[in-house]
Image (cartoon, rainbow, N blue to C red):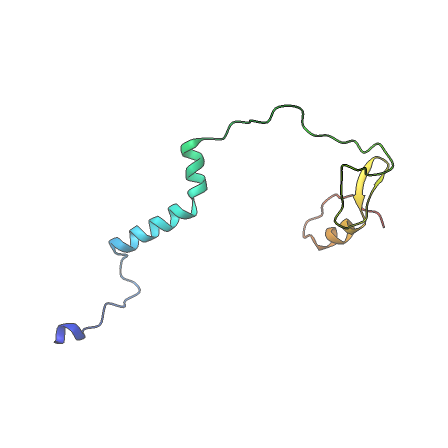
Length: 102
């Protein structure tokens, strides 16, 4: 009966057991699953053909192919910008070049 009453070894400096090493290894492998997948399979091939999308905004209106979700977007001197960007830029830690009109 005395054998059942002995507490487990609660020393935090004891070495990690076999189950602990296995569990830690599985956690590291799961956290890096995307990287392991990329190393095993390689980068995917590009399947989209044709030219890349480009818009020079050399017009007065944004156009029917675009929709806005706020921010008062407009075109000035061939550049697309928003007055809201000024507020967003003030919240960033590093300065970022953005077009903003007030």
